[in-house]
Image 1 (spheres, helix red, strand yellow):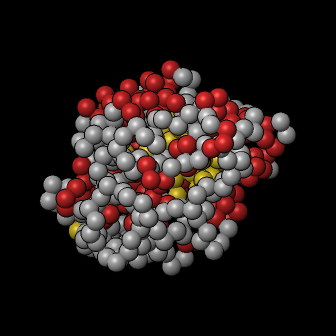
Image 2 (cartoon, helix red, strand yellow):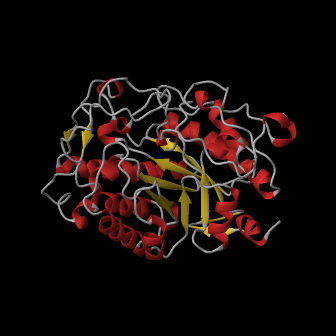
Length: 382
């Protein structure tokens, strides 16, 4: 094994735990839970199979009924959901793994059909582009334009922050090693951060400091309910996915990252989605804790990033969809299974728990260990 590759297989302290290697399973929406958001036997097996990752970050979990955006996705606000997630975390821990739960409130990207007829909520009453088609493969949500959301009142903003804090409490009860706030991909925290979706003139909008106040208040509330080491954040700075735009993303995210660094959170996950500036090079020096990079990495590029000290962990999405034993394959430079895009968002075992480990794979169906991810809608990630 090369010196660079060996760097991926050293332990790392993140928050309240130490992980066994620098490979993370990225958060990925896969739609295998029940309609009322309870993890199933399939979820238990899927995560158990992938527990050799240094860290699993779960698919996006909605922290309240109003945060739900997709069918068959899991929640974390009822006793049944807590019980379901406890089965998952116990399975992962039983295999020696670690798992953070990603808390994902979709905000304006919901639909009344998902919310028992209620109007979706957002930072402001700004409708996402009604002509946009963000998903290139079938994703279980109503196939119609996003409606105009209702702007949250000040009191309601505080209520949503409480929902985030309570989700952290329930995550601890469910056995998670921590939580990751999904502040990327155009979901609610990013709707507050972005200048085109946040037109507020109160304490939650206008200046960089005020637009960042919602995310930072969620972090502070979750930390107060648990610990700094229990809370992480994911950002996709400058990305316009889901119709969010920022007049000055470098200024916005430089401020946010400095504030997150001062809070001593478990880690910061950063995604660079070809936005025209060096996200990693600009923001990584501003964060003193562990940094996880995600988006488009392969075995050699991940090894180089960790070995060179640019990143502390690398998260893989599609590679972990198709290779439950990805850590073993990367460590020994073994060929990879090919992911089946058509089954990403279906509801059965096919394409979810039936990918073979290397010893059981058909050699003729494998691809090189350094194969790049399949170009596809970023909706594959949470």
